[in-house]
Image (cartoon, rainbow, N blue to C red; front, side, top):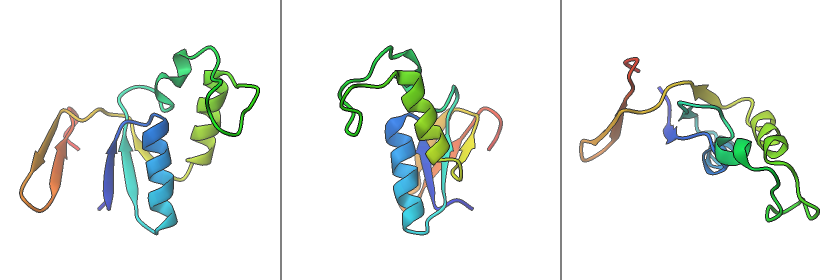
Length: 96
């Protein structure tokens, strides 16, 4: 069982998963498309710390994905979220 479910493997989802792993939690990311999010569409990213001269969106996405290699990413989107008062529950089109 996963400790945390993250919907979307864009920059925020990947960063959240990495931080959770630092605290010995087991996150799982659900991503219906390609990890890296909209960075794949960005020609040039000039406002990300650590890259003062800028970096291409695809190169930054690849760096994020490489750093998050130990995070479980499920290649499905989440079709339904529900809350039972204690936990969130997620459903995917594939039944996960």
